[in-house]
Length: 176
Image (tube, rainbow, N blue to C red):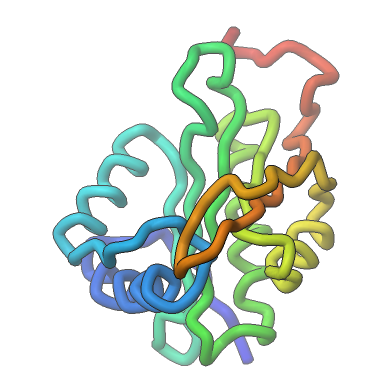
C-alpha cells in the first residue's frame, strides 16, 4: 500500500472534518466537545498555513487517509522555535503506515523551516498507538499531567512528549 503525502488544500476539508468528527464525538484524542463544521476547519487550516506552518494529508489509492499539521506550541516569543504536532489517521487506515508517513513528513517540514523542538500533547496514557508512534520518531516522555482535562464524564491525564529537530538546543537558530 503506497502512501502519498502532499500539502492539504481546501478541497480536503470534508474528509479532514469527517476524520476529526470521530475524534471529537467518540474518543479523547482531542479535548473538544463539539464537532467543528467545515467552515471552522477551513478557518483553522488557513490560520495554520497562513502562519507558515505545515498542514499535510496522506492519500492511499486516492482516498484521504489522514492528516497532520504543526502549530505554535505557545504564543510567547521565546517559544518561536518550538512547534506542537497533531496527527490524525482515519480508522480504516490505522496500523498501515499512514501515521508514520505523516509524522516523518511533518518532522521534515518543520526541520526545513528552522524549528528546533517538537512537542506532542497526547490525550491519555492509554493512547498507546500514538505514544508508540512518537517513540519510533525519537520523542521522549516529558511527563503526564494528571486529570488535566475532562471529557465523556471522566477526568483525563495528558501525556507530554518532545523531540529535537535539526540541531535542537545545541546551537542558536540562524534567524535569532
